[in-house]
Length: 227
Image (cartoon, rainbow, N blue to C red; front, side, top):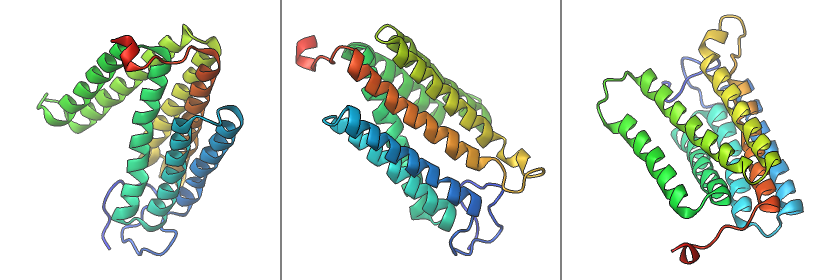
């Protein structure tokens, strides 16, 4: 079977489908599951009635399982199981976080601008090459994260510090993901496994941030109360 989808240092020229196709990447994906289980333990201990946090834990664990299968088998369905839960996790997590630190009007405005930026970068001819569009998308995501952290500081300094640590961890993960191709020459397995470690650590820290905001901040008002 020919290669498709993202490729890494470990990706062979011909995909056999025999598990694990990419051993280091498949094994390191287990870290995502471990962080998901650790987050689940924290939710059960600190926020046992928070349904949305249980959903985020389930998404993180599912993403880890999907990542193991993607790097282990490299099939199209496993790529979907890897990507889709992660994308939903980021979106849901950001909305829950935002609702803890800002009213609905500001949340709608911030996410409207964010989504409009991503759509423009994806579908509008801005004269940017693909690497430029990816860089601009990353900047938009970082901008949203910085806004969330700044808003969190007004509610809880500890929550803002946790959020900052989550962002630093995610940026570190992105650095290792970007360096994977270059690392092939000096390190046979590349650096993609560190993307798994630091990105899942960032996801875990984001969940801790939301839990800290739940413990120290005001409860978000329903839409009817803000109308």
